[in-house]
Image (cartoon, rainbow, N blue to C red; front, side, top):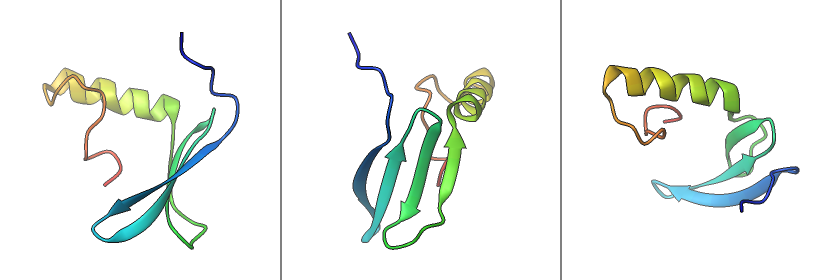
Length: 70
């Protein structure tokens, strides 16, 4: 059984030599360049809606794509 997401989890990732912070919260997900406050945010509802549109268009069924946050 999966653990319920009830608080924010932060992790660091690296893309193209740049460090980014990923914050996963009950409200959604936020990607911010490390050392900055402003970043890209997406609610779970908008992520789900975008994934449904991609699936309907035949872009794939994984639910995650590089086009959503890149």
